[in-house]
Image 1: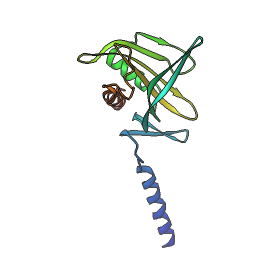
Image 2: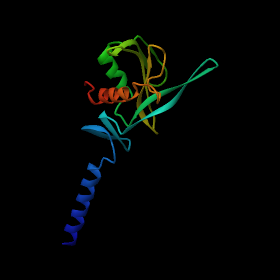
Image 3: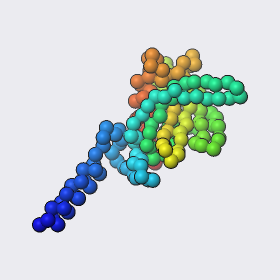
Image 4: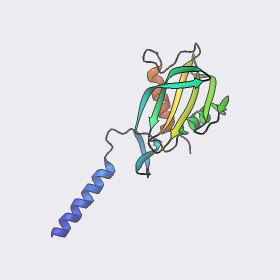
Length: 164
C-alpha cells in the first residue's frame, strides 16, 4: 500500500510538472527539452521589446527590438520573413545568427516597412528577434508608434504558423 501511494505521488508530480505552462505562450503542438531548457517548436516562452544597440566604427545606435525567448531556433523570424517576402535584400554574416533585412515591403495596405531579423543562441538564452522601421525611418516598436501592437501580433503569428 505504501509503495502504491509513493508511485501515485510520483506519477502525479510528473504529470503536473509536464503540463504546467506558467504563463507560457506557445502553439502547444511541439515542445522539446534541450540542455535543461524547455524550447518551443513553433512557439516561444515569452517576448520582450528591448533597447538594442549597434556599433559601427565609432557610432553607437540604439533601437527597439522584439525578442521571442526559448524558441527552438534562433532563425525562426528569419525563416518566417523569407516564407512571406522571399530572399532578403541583404544579409550580414557574423559569428552568430545572420542578420537579414527585407526593405520596403507593404505589410498591410498603406504600411510599408523595412524588417531586420536576428537572433542569438548561447548557454544562457536563445531568442529570435526583429526590428521594424516604417518608410519614414521610425521604429515601429516604440511605445508611441501606432502599429506597435500590430507588429507584436504579426511576429507572434509568424512563429506560430512557421512552415516546416
